[in-house]
Image (cartoon, rainbow, N blue to C red):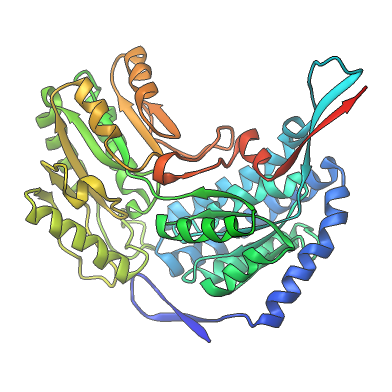
Amino acid sequence: MSTEVPNPYTGQVEHRQTLMGSNTVEAALHAAQAAFPEWAQRSIEARADVLHAVAAALRERRGTFQALMTAEMGKLKKEALAEVDKCADACDYYADHAAQYLRPEPIQTEARSSYVRYEPIGCVFAVMPWNFPIWQVFRFLAPTLMVGNTALLKHATNVPRCADAIAEALRAGGVPEGVFGVLHIDNDQAAQVIRDPRVAAVTLTGSERAGRSIAATAGSVLKKCVMELGGSDAFVVLDDADLDKTVAAAVKGRFDNAGQTCIAAKRFIVVDAIAERFVQRFVEAAGQLRTGDPNDEATTLAPMARQDLRDELHKQVAASVADGATVLLGGQPGPGHAEYPATILDHVKAGMPAYAEELFGPVASILRVHDEAEAVRVANDTSFGLGGSVWTADAARGERVAQQLQCGAAFVNAIVKSDVRLPFGGTKRSGFGRELANHGMHEFTNIKSIYVS
């Protein structure tokens, strides 16, 4: 059985990926189990040397990764190159900081000695999405490998060559055979892998539907899992916001990666006193974005990754308009295979898809509110809780509002982003558990208490 991988811009099938059979999957599971003891017993310094070498291999392959990301999911050339750089930097970061994050933590008790150790647990199975084909993988992989775990990856079916290129970069960096493996498998096979006793834990970045399924499977066999799911982040514009800075951030925060990111600004909650000025300037700035060939430097808005995703997004837009939302910009599919223009919907109200659902594409929802208190209420009136941002000239005011947002990360006068130094994850239907920083590194460890009387 094989799957077709069409180019998002041209629609032409550039690759057909054959799914693995049961014998190949079995060999990968066996290899991961066999490699674990030696990798776990290596010193942190020895594992760090390997991760630094992987970082170098990624940088050497920048052009290769860029071409694959652009061909498989339509990422703009400059965005793809930046993604590779971020992955290399993450490998260096965890290589440099793992000893600090994993050092035993002394605890004062009546014992002669008591402390907490962070120990590797085995093979971590990752199910990763297509929107950041390299970064999503290294976001879990760099800290996981530094802990001493092994890993198996089921990547999204439309980015198979990106997955294989990751494996090649790890081999070039000296990662031993079996420490990392790629599984080209379907969802039924993935469920079997989760249930396999050689898999210790599961991590997923993906949709809420995928999260429910995978978390249920992991729970049925009592395995730890981390779920990073969807988001509908609030971008709260208060009446004293610096419009030059805020509008520029709004365009970048909503339309980078064609709006296909879980932490993109999606709901623009704007106080009435500044709404007309913000909306006018937002529409003007977003209107300058240009769709087209993602390899062309003149293109500033990438195509969406797949035509079916574009069509589903347009259904949400059309339903919101039918319910009373106003189209200020865009609103109709473009001529390209998976093209959708920058779109802004105004007067979005409760009950509309643009209010309640995640719009995973280049569509911004404007929600007008009377004051700060209503802005907080509307920002929290969502089943998601991944990120949010607050824009104001008063940093103390922004911090106070940010503390009231029900989400995993709240930024003041800055676009929400994933940062290796900060824990990343959500609450409510955006998932549970954390990636990145020491918090994420500890997720897939055995947090062991040692007590010496």
